Image (cartoon, rainbow, N blue to C red; front, side, top):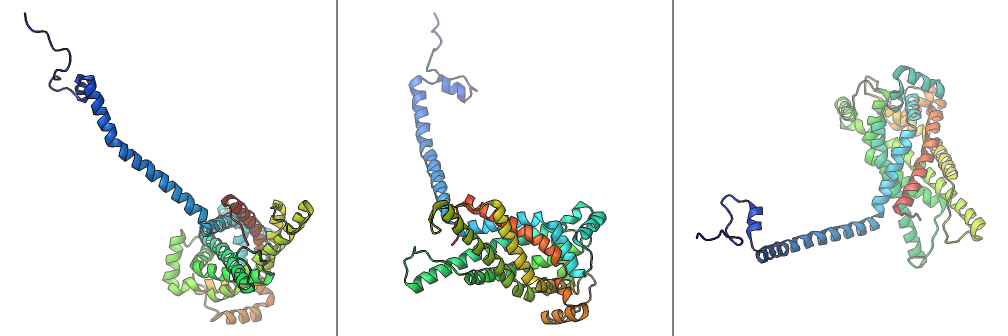
Length: 368
């Protein structure tokens, strides 16, 4: 009779797919093929796993040593949160400094809400946050860096060990904070001009980019740096006083808490300052700083807007602006807007330090 059909090991039918081909193979052949495929993929998989492990390890090492980036991030977050929280008061303070007026803070806020609605409370806040994030970030980073250099210098000059405890005097913190403020302001000053224009003339510029282009068109590149001189002069006492007061008071309170809780004000054990006290310290520091530098702030705002949007050019230099404002409007004009500015600064600075201290704890940072 005819031979029986093949039952295994025969060739697959024409047009059979990969699964049919594999099914038609003897068991030993399929096993060998799978082993060969696995052997080919194993080095690739191993290389991918090794790369992932190495990348993860490198990232962890980098992040553990990236204190400067962490300080920058902590300061930036603190600036954004605090400035947004007090944006309505910031808008009112800017308006009073530029155009003057005798309305109270509540009256100004009511008029702003009536004429522009709730969005009027946050006009210019985008540019403000774009400015304050790098400003605060650089301020805190530069301040911490200056302090670390001062401590290192004092150790070397006194012949102390590299890990010896060294304390900084209040005036040293003042100097470190002052230079930190000047560096940060000089880096982001054009955004301050744009923020002022968006706050004063919200209908003229639809956004930050349009305000930039508008200032360049009306006053040229120099328009982005109008008022820089009084700003740098004001930033030294402003930021210096703020940092000095806050940190000096904070260290004194920490010593008191250590003495009451551990019996030794120099104890190495950590203590936690209540949030309400940190808020209060930041608020007082902000008020002291704002009051010390407010006349320069008024001059800066006036210089920023002159020659723009149809405003006449009234002042030639910073000193000319001081003298002209004092002679024509009285010395009190140099403190126009101090009330709303302090109302904005007091909670704003308090919130900033609470957020900053929280970020430091989250990121594992310590200050000298």
